Length: 459
Ligand code: UGA
Image (cartoon, rainbow, N blue to C red; front, side, top):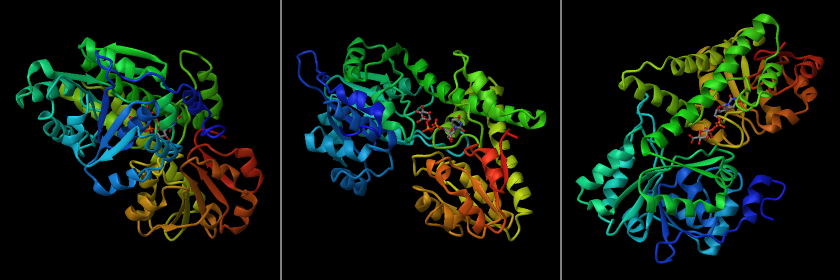
């Protein structure tokens, strides 16, 4: 009953355990290699191991491998440590620094290395290139190379041609695209209960093997060509980001018209064709995926000679939320110069310690530039934030964070902020005011306690 109560959806898949192993045509159990133990690689490897596959994960970071061998994940992800320990104990997963050895031992090699933004919106695929170089010499029989990393459209074809260029005989080269759709903070649930698996490629054996690997997921597998699979990944993230930006633009109209954006989202979301998810108005989208992928698809589109205006507007609308929020904080605090502002939440969303492209980074930057003294509390992300912003005072809880402050700026909707006793907070602030960047609190309740209160698109 590992996750009962805590992660009900994960439990569903736990019951599934797992008589199906990937086997080759002679019935021999195949070994899965995973190159890269970042978010995607580690969660994928651990879930495969949980499903009963034999998995070896390689990462060049020796310290990380050492910790993983002891069952300590380098990232904060609910449930991951438990499942990792269990898979280690069952002998289904191992960790190594040796990429070449991993590739030699494995029949199926998942490439799950990072593809960060180069700084100009283009994806940096140098880690993919390095991985391909390392494994090329180990393809001594037909092996399936699975591209799990988010890569620009056409990369699978490039990997194939690169393996041929490096001397791998054509009969052994088999490259498949298999994009991932995990959300940080819900990664185990998503990996075990996916809406769909996408597999892009043209090799029948590879398609069969992929369906065996994912059998325990019990969901539909969409088979398509590699370029379409690569594009599905970008298109999905861009569409979700666009949905968030759409509701955020409507939140501006709600303020002008005196309407309520939450009821608006509810009313739209009840239409099954639209759906309610990703219609929560607020500070907008951040993280390591949406910004990278929206810019990434926009650049790829430009390179293909098409100006994808919807994506540009999606970014513009997202940036506007920061301006609106900082203006609201300034108005509530009575200026920013010399004022103490308290940030509630630093992670780019709840249930993660990830601050990459977090709205908190942009807001803190702007407040500091305007001369404010910034205090902060986050249940998981304070260490990372402190490194980037040494001048921000980290606090032990939401109460000490709000003390003597001119405005609380709620940035990440961690449940703990909804449970705070606001009456206590009010009495310790120098000016009881809350700018709610995630529409997380009830306006009538907060105002009833004597706060000045602002949120996006609600009266
Ligand atoms: C996203 C996708 O949801 C995953 O399917 C995908 O696999 C992943 O990127 C990836 O490419 O690796 P993630 O970045 O973990 O997952 O975060 P989301 O839960 O999608 O949220 C993204 C951002 O949108 C967050 O900053 C969140 O606060 C914001 N958001 C989300 C809103 O502002 N409003 C909403 O209604 C929903």
